[in-house]
Length: 95
Image 1 (cartoon, helix red, strand yellow):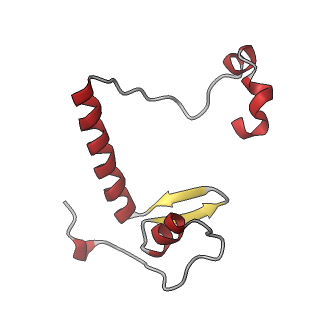
Image 2 (cartoon, one colour):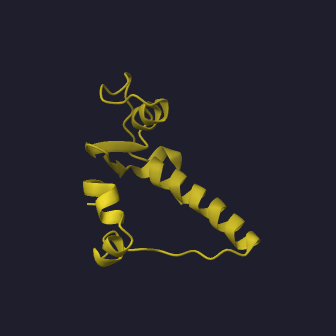
């Protein structure tokens, strides 16, 4: 377990210029995430801790409700999207 005093943490005084949503501004300023490219972020140590806490709470609630967790790969084959017409419907946003 990490103690707060052992975390490498860099905070920002001003809002990031590319952030328009309050949560985005706060997460970057507080040192939870760092932007890498447009829409792509790295989780910093404090952000990873918060993310794991949220995941833990969600898993507890899912277990309590009898749900099952699944994990999909980042890239999926094109065929299922073509069969359901989502390939044309969503366009390049699918990757």
